Image 1: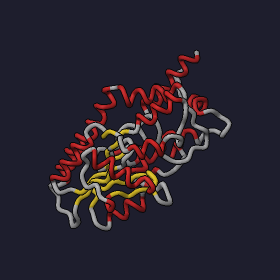
Image 2: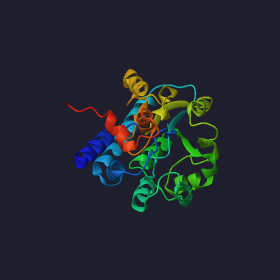
Image 3: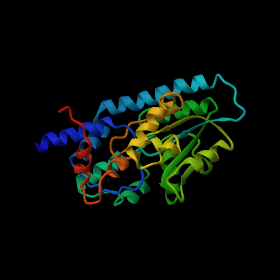
Length: 261
């Protein structure tokens, strides 16, 4: 029975592609982490979804550029699990039995994260078309130098201090998006977490996040381009927020699954 429950949890996680805020329930490494990390590190299906997202972004950008704008165009992208792949860190947590934030500083300072499939090619095509790239990330600003180094060494365009907006006081990205709007028209926003698109999704209420997603369905694929992240993110924080601190993360998620009987 335990194996069946684990498979159910893994299936639910692999189907939830909304991707970090504080978590009420303690998140510990489990079999569900293993399935999610294996999916993103080892499955060609995950790679295909990433290519699909950036192929769609290129199609939309070409269409958007047929219009006239008063300001220069920019593509706004998240970093982690949007343009840089941190799954080796998540895998190391499982292999060596520790959890975030342990090891995160060491991983970031290595500046060796590989690009997400399709990201470098798309952003360089955008650059060739005269479109700026703005990086908005909730990495702490103390990691600015290794982040710039990692992006530049992997071939990303527009890697400059003024184009890298990292977290200082808040995880909310709306202030930084408004900062971008002072100088650019945001042609596309690309991310793995709904909070990468709008503050409509900055809530720990899972039902509110779902309703906001449904109510804005026409923007996905048009201006908001979503990448998959089954390992962590706002979706998981909101679900775990439905349980008390004493409930384990697996038990919390299991209690919210809906079967057919």
